[in-house]
Length: 379
Image (tube, rainbow, N blue to C red; front, side):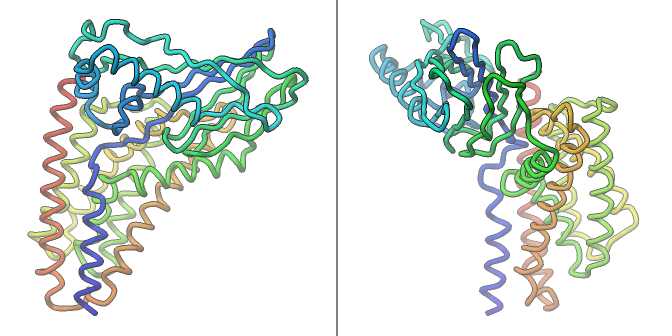
């Protein structure tokens, strides 16, 4: 039984190592415009090259471009046709519940892929898919839906002649609330906004915040006793809450090229120290507080990609932070449950804490190098 529990704990720790990228809280920025002439246009911003090839959007963009360039003109035409078909199948603009047909265009597509520079940000099919169609006569409301093939959707719905558009944040595969046509567009209520940003904050930790999960597990592994763990988590929470708020308000700013490698280095340091010390030292809590300041800047970067609602700025900020806290508590709860039967064993440190901490430290160091290298190339 003990062996099974230990294996379960190690499996829980091993899961986040897969797909170890930083803050991949990307969004499909979408603007749906309802025009006075009875037409609509939806602009979706996403990685069309990766979508056409069916590869992970987190893959190296230069490799994706090279793969498309290596194909013959006929094969690229097939890719383009498949991309149009995919968008037609996995995106819906519904009026009164009925999908409206639309044409798919790629205004940023490069006619000659050979001319695409081998540089970060280069693209063949572009980053914008343009969907155009007609609004049915006497339509009363419209909704937008994109399948789970796309990241969460940051949706803006603008009606010509109305000053204030409606804005929504949709989870992958979620349909927007109905937007009334011909009236002042109303956005989500405060409660709905809080729930959406709470879910986004939680998701930024579980399952997408691999680095933050490993950092919290590093704090958990120092000691099986509750007091040291709570002291560290409290210091971490206080720090990242402060910098999340200050950075979101524009008071503190630091380039992701600097923040991301330092976050990875903080993971490596905490895990490495676990292999050398068994008890909490006063400077450990102070260091964790400093690391929390860095992680808060990372959270702010993710929240900056999302954006906050104008009318409910504070609601969105507090809800996102609360979601982050719930995500951290979920990681700690999983670790507690997985090790409940073995934490008091004399071999727990030598067989679990030390090897797992060592593995986390190695991952953290690898991320530090990879992120620093990526940061240099992005400058």
